[in-house]
Image 1 (cartoon, rainbow, N blue to C red):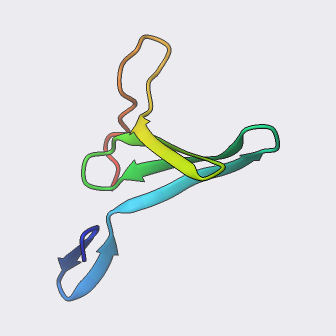
Image 2: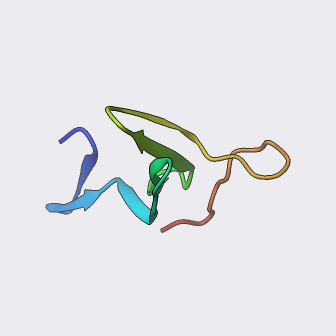
Length: 69
């Protein structure tokens, strides 16, 4: 229940997968959106490791989708 929120007895997933791209020479890149804050994250999976960080726009600002709901 770490990433789920109960809303009137309906479980709502906190994160939405916006896109998934497999890059043969790199690995898998996934864009996630936090439904609570609208913040976009980029998750990379390369070989046996992975990482996640906020997605930045061309000005270095965190990408936030408002209103998200």
